Each structure stands twice: as C-alpha cells, then as structure tokens.
Image (cartoon, rainbow, N blue to C red; front, side, top):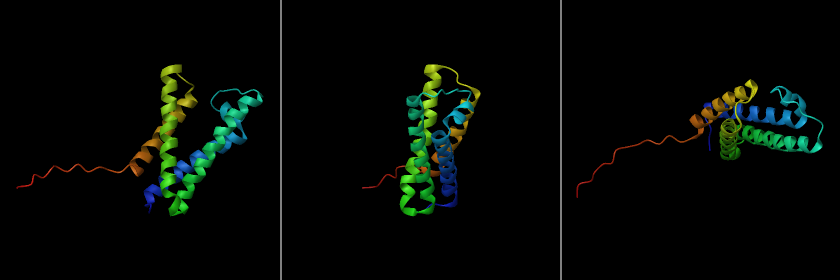
Length: 138
C-alpha cells in the first residue's frame, strides 16, 4: 500500500500524538494528569493501571509512525490510527453522558482527538462513489 503525502502527514500527526501522550502517561503520570486537574496519589495499583494503557498507546503510536517509513506496516498503521482516534473520543462522549462534565483540559483533549479522528476518516476511509444503476436492454 502506497501512501500519499496527506496520508503520511495524518499518520505522522496521529503517531506523534499517540506516542507522546502514551510515553508521558507511562513515565510521568503525575505530571500528565495534573495538567487535567487530576491529583494522583502514590497507590501502586492505580499507577500501574494508568501506566499500562499509556505504554500501549505509545506502542500504537510507534506502529503509526512505522507505517510512514515502511510500506508493509501501512495497513496496520492506518488501522491503529483509526482505532485509537475513534475510540478515545467515543469513550469520552460516553463518559460525558454517564458521568457529567469533565474539566476544561479534558474537553480540549476531546476536541483535539475529534480533529485527529476527522483527519483519519478523511484520509483513510474509502470514498464510495454512488453511480446510478444502468438498466440493460434485453
């Protein structure tokens, strides 16, 4: 699969974002969550539950970036970008409905994730051309 410039750009934005956020959650969860107004304690179990998906997000970001450099990773990179950037906003919207209004920082994250999701959809979801049925004479 060959990627054009726009698709590579979108994968780059998605990959760097996923890797950066994931790596920060994994290595500096207190700082990351403080930026959203969330204070974490020193409970090892909670920190483990935050660092583990952070590492997964960072790994998915690496896969997205590999899709730019290696054609054989392009399909998996596209799937990873769509999965991450459609599921994160979906989860936030479920939380908004079930839990109420989060902090402004989390709302800004939702907007940012929706922008990347829109870019991923534009870049990677095939356009279906609807052509009228041509009736055949028999």
